[in-house]
Length: 301
Image (cartoon, rainbow, N blue to C red; front, side, top):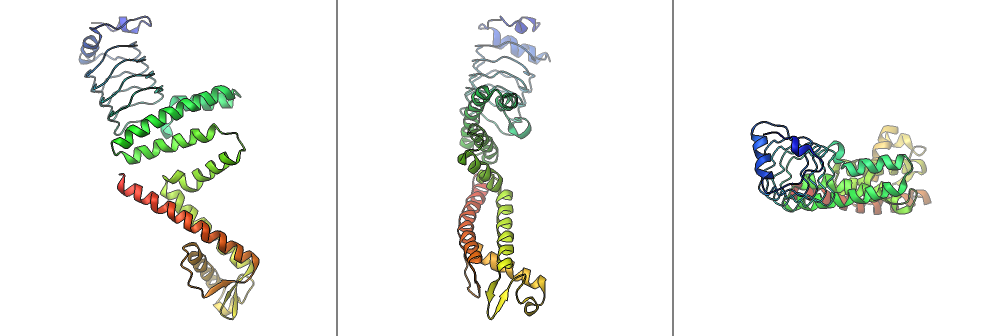
């Protein structure tokens, strides 16, 4: 049996299509580039099949065994993948717009570099060429794809993978906003500072950054420590040198950030008081985000 007829763009699937495709696969034939628009492939057994660059538009692969399948470059527009097994599949550069991922097993799926869908890649390309309308259209498509994938992953308690897709969803949401709008700037800050609540490393870096910067500001103006001024230009010798001064300033900054409030060190000027208020508020917010992120890492995984 030859796959030539399946390479014809005008090929129309019939009731024998699934059996013929399964036979080709069993015979070791590559299925790359075949046309399976509207094909009824329910419960097809195509484990480790090469379906790269195939057109599976509106095909029904519900319940299909597609473990380890290579779908790189495939068109999955409105493909029904309900209940299909796509574990360890290669889904790089797929058009997944409108695909049904209800109860689809998506463990260890390779979605490509940074989990970018082809629609987002095309959007970035359109934006770089100045076609803003096309870029926004493709970003919207990407958002729909990421949302569908995220919901499927969450339903299977694949929290780590769902978190990665959620990041992409939020990124394309941001890219649809006007470049210098306050909301887009806030989105970018949330991404860099907190990884949208998904990257614990980003949150830790933010905590360290706020503590160090605040300590520097405290040292510039000086803070009251008993009868002495603790700061870069204060009573340095009374604290045993500049390193001890820095250590005490960091200690004070940690106390403010964590809202412990022991009270032996106090700000003495408007700069210190302002920084203390901002750091205390920021500390409460960031620590809340940090605890939620840790909880999700532990419980959703």
